Image 1 (cartoon, rainbow, N blue to C red):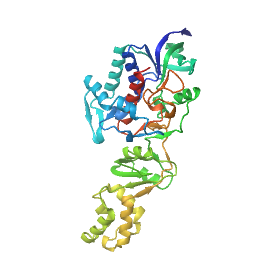
Image 2: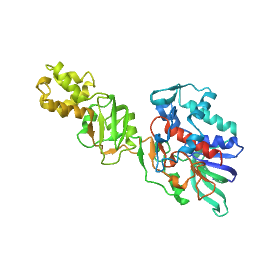
Image 3: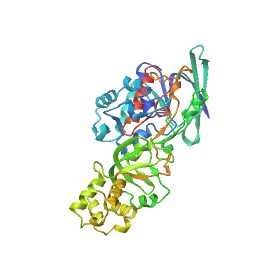
Length: 414
C-alpha cells in the first residue's frame, strides 16, 4: 500500500453535475481544486439522464418548481447562475440542443456532450480529478470561534491488481457534492448525510422522489395486463396537479406525470387520474346517449382512449352493461361513469423506492446553510451543493439546474 500527502485549496467530494461545475468555477479563480469520485468514472447520472440525451435545464425556471422545507432557499442561487448562463456555456461549446414540451432542453446527439463540456472546463481551469476513491474519514482543524478551519480528507484509491493507494490530503474548503440515495447503482449513497451529522448539521426526513408507483390491490394485475400502454392524463394529489403522459407497467404506474406527482404523495394517499382531458365526461356521455343511443359504450370510448384500457374500465365500471345500448343506461349511471373517467381514484401501495427514483426528497437542512454561498453557517470552510441538500426540483431539467446553480454559487467563494 502506497501513501501520499498533498495540500489543496479546495477538495470536492463527488464528480457529478454540481461537483464538476463547482470545481471548474473555483479553479477558474485560481484555486487549486481536487475532485474526488468513488465510482470508476465521473458524471454517471448525467450520462443516463433524459434517455441518454440529458435534459440539462429548462427554459422556464421558477422557485415554485422546487420543493424544500424552506421554499425561499433556492432563490439566491437560481438568480446567481440562471438557466441562460448554462445555456450560454452549452452554445459556447457548440453543443446542439433542442426544446421539447414544457420548456425542457435536451442534447440533440448525446448526454456525453454535456459531460465532455464540463470535463473540458475542468481541464482548462486545472482541476485534478481522481476516481475509484473510497472515503476513509474527514477531520477539521480550527474552530468557529477563530473563523479559520482546515480539513484533512483520508481516502483510498484503487489501483491495478488489487493494490490501493492511501492518501491524506488537506484543504481550506471542503465541498460535499456526493448526491443522495437515489439510484445506488449510479453511485447514490448517504455519505453526504453522514458528513453533515459529523459536523452537527441536521438532516431532514428523506424519501424517494420522481419515482413510479406500485400497487398491491386489484389494480396491480390490471397494470400488468396494460403494460406498455401510455396516454396523456392529468393526475392530482394533495392539491397538486400535473398533465403529462402516464405509462402502465408490469409493476404499476410510471411516466412523467406519475414521477411528477410522486413528489407530493405520501403513503396512504390516493391519486386521482383524469382520463379525458378537457372533457366533462358526464356531460359528454349524456349528449352521446342522445346522438348514438343504439351504440354500446365501449366502441364510443375507443375513439378517445386505448381499446385495451376501455376493456378494463368496462369490466370495472359497467360490466353488466357491456353490450347494452347506451340508450338503456340511466342518466345517473352515465354521470357516475363520467365522474370516474374524470376522476379515477387509485391508491398506490408504495413507490419503487430509491432503486429507480430520479431524486431524493429531503436532505441537509437548509436552515444551517447560507443560501448565497452554500456554506455551513457554523462550520467554516464546509459547503454542501446539489442533491444532498433539502432542495428537489420537478421533472424537466430543474434538478440539473439546481446542481449548476448551487455548484456555481459555492465555486465563487470556496
